[in-house]
Length: 208
Image (cartoon, rainbow, N blue to C red):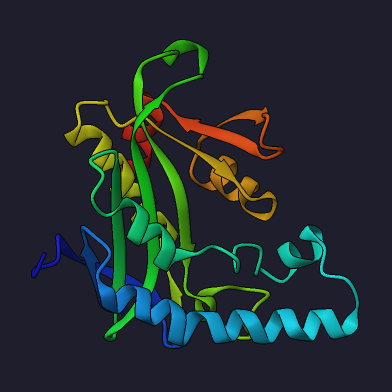
């Protein structure tokens, strides 16, 4: 893919100004390279600092917003790039990758009013480390997570899934999905994580 799916706006927290952001409909080599060369060193430095202070538990990693530092984006791209069951997206601003997402197209809803209807299942969703509170003193861009979540809803609509999406939330993100995005918290499942779904009605409300 040589052209972005669209141009959107992110807010630069430092200047309060809006900046253009490109949404890409598949992960390119440069997105993986940005993760390896730009994201990972920041994650590794914070993890090293935490290890010097003691054991890095999941709770501690969550408090410092590095709970997903172990995600292997390059490996996932290699494994999934030829599969029709997977879709991937990236957000770029100022020539740098600001957000990444993988989603499955073969999920089924658990929420009682939507049970067994098809949905888009978000597998991985991450923003660049310099955009994260508790990881950096002055986070840069705001709105990346909402843009990617809206993209998953649009994908669901395009697949004729009526906007339904689902995902497992890392502990520190659970309140954001529930209280900000308006998703339904279906509780902790076999993964040990809270599972969330967005119904057709909730998807319409989010897009509005």
